[in-house]
Every structure is written in C-alpha cells, then in structure tokens.
Image (cartoon, rainbow, N blue to C red):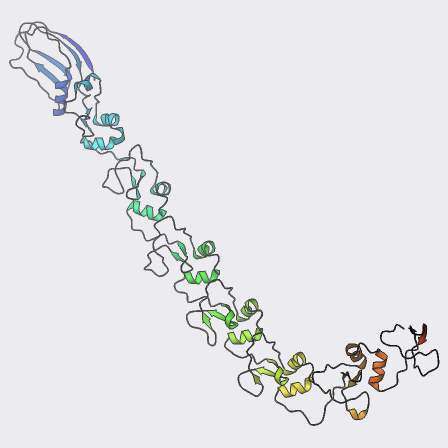
Length: 503
C-alpha cells in the first residue's frame, strides 16, 4: 500500500532516550521499510516522535529538541523488487540497492514473480528460479529441441521429460507425437516419440522395403531374423503387413515370391515356374526338393503356377505338353510315340526297349499310339504296316493291299493297290511308299492328273475304251460343234473332248 502522510510535530520532551529504528517484521520487510521513506522535510527537531506505519511495522526515530516538523511524502512496504540489469544476473533483486532512477520511474514490483514477468518475460521462469523463488511447474506441453533431435516438455529441466522452460519463440504442442510430426518430420515418428520420452525403442513392428534382396523386412533390430534394422528416419515408408509392402514397393515381383522372401522361415513358395533353357518347369523350393523334380529359387519376375501341368501350358506353350510334364515331374519319359523319318516308323519316348527312341526336340508332336503316329506323320506308308514295324513286328511275305488308288504319271492314269493278276485297274502295291492314296479313281484323277479329261482318266484307269459324254463342244479348227464321242464313229462325233473343252 502506498500512503501519504503529513505529520506536524510540536515541541516534545524526551519521549524516548535513544534514537531507535525498530523493524519488527521479517528482515526483508525491515529493509523495505528503511527505504520506504522517500523524502522527509525537517525544519526543526526538538523531540523524538513515533510514527506507526502499519500493524506489523513501526519506525521510531529520535529528533532534535528545537523544532520538529517533517513530511512523509511516500511510504510503501511492498514494491521493492527491481530488475538486475546492471548486475546481469537475469533475475530481480530485493536488496534495497536499486538505482534511484528505478524508484523515480516506479519500476519496482511487489513480488519476484511480478518483476520477472515484467522485465524478463522470455526467461520469466528462469528468472524466478535464479531469484530464489519457487520454480513454476510450466505448461507441461511439448516443444522441439533440434540440437538433440527430440521433443521436450515445458517444465524445470532435470525431471522426467522436462527440457527446461519454453521461451516465447518455442511452439508448444499438446503431446510429443504432434510435436515430432510437426517439427521433426525427418525422423520416424515412433523413434522420435521414444527419444522424447526416454524409452527404449525396439522399432515399430511395421514393414519397409529391402530392394537389394527383393523383400520386405520388419522395423526392428536386425539381429532378429526377418528384421532389417530399426527405421529411425522418415525416409522409410512403413506398412502394417508384408502383402501391402510388397504390393506398393515391389509390385514388379511375383506377390508369392515377395511374401516368401520376406518370411525368414520360408524355403520357397512350392509353386512352379518355367525354366525356358531346359524346356521344363522348376519348383520354387530351396529346402527339401520333391523326388524327381528340379528345384530352384524363383527370382520374382516369373509367373508361378500351382501345378506342373499349368506351368507347362501357361509358360512353355511351344513345348509339347507331355514332354514338359514328364521332364518336370521326375518321370523322365512320357512313353508317347513320335515319328522316326529315317526308318519310316514311329518310336516311343522311353529309356529302354525295342520300341524306344531318343527324343531330343521338345517341340516334337507326340501321339498316344504308334498307329496314330503313323497315320499322322507317315501318310505315304501303309498305316497297318507302319504300326506293325513301329511296335517291333515284321511284315508277312504275302502282299497286303489297301484297294486304294495311286497315280501313275507314265500312263496319265491311276492304279489301284490290289493284286495285278486281277487285271486293270489293279497294279499291285505302290512302287513308292510315299505316294498318296485315294479312295477312288475319280478323286485320284481330279487331284493328281488335272490336265487329263476326267472321263478319259477314269476309262484308262479301268482299262476300258472311252465312250464320251455324247455332249457337244466347239472344234475351233473346223469352225463347228462336234459330239464328244470317238472320232472313228460317224458324224457328228468329233473325238473325245479334252479337259479344257466346254461341253
């Protein structure tokens, strides 16, 4: 409180015997009171007087004996804290040594807290601590400490997550997560949170990509199988599961291969992929390989199939299916039939036996039986004979005939495959097994002797005289139409029409 009091004192005689200043309050308050009297005009002192300023404080002074008249212009017991600008202690003092200009300018404050807030606003809390006051709790909110790469709480340093009091330049956040995300975005959020709260960080348990090994690894200590090391920076994009990580970061790899690569306990997918070089399908397995199969680790760019058959059909379509399957599943041989042109027979895809042959071309057409092979690949050979010879048999010495027709270019006619002793059209077996056989003379003539008039070819084949069609055609040499009949017959016969004549 500020008080202004004018005291008129008359002439008194010896109120007290000794000059005394009594500060009955605490020592700091006594000092305050000593300094509280700002100006006293004393005209004549004749006696001692007592000035009671407050219930807790009194001032007793011995004055002169001639004349006593003084004025207390200002008396205060509270406003005594001043900023220690000259001493540089960064706090407020209350030692009664404040500069006079601070008193005249009313810069003093009632309490340490008020003084610190007024003159050390940016370091107000530290000012209170330095001045011997009770440390404030602080806001307990979070601000960034760039030097240590973490967030700290606004509270006295040395306790918990406290980093000291925040300054006005610090942005405060409700929790460490928001502080980390906003101010330390280059760090992994979980790592930043752990650093800020002083807790051990074992990783997030999420997954990030390992491009070198074509897999996704867990965010944890790399000493643990399947872990790629703790991701401490935001450069690692984290995913909650392997499938999403593989899809987002390793989409060029087969999803099953990526999942297998990412599983430290996996020895492969157990699925099949094409080995183009060997024309087979291999099992993606690095552990125990099924008997007879070829196992290898898939690189991830291949298409995987659940079965060998699907793999052969899907990725090795140019390879004969039975060849691919038999070479892939461990059976080694398909036991199917394929042609042996050099011997004009069909042989079997097998290892040992009279009917076995060596199949070196993976694209060779295979058949279920020797007869089908003969009919499909050796059409100029009697299929029955081909079948017999292919299965290791021998042909009978008695000729066999097909009763089909083959061409005889020498006579511009067709001949029937039957015993020549029976006369035309029979001419015995074809002189060349490669000759094409036809079911009837008309087809043989039309297919093989297109330049010969069909009726003439058929007549010559059957060994009979041509009768003609009795139709008419133009004889350009004679400039008239003649009948299609023998020239030895009377007019209008003009001879047999040729194949190019229109009748």
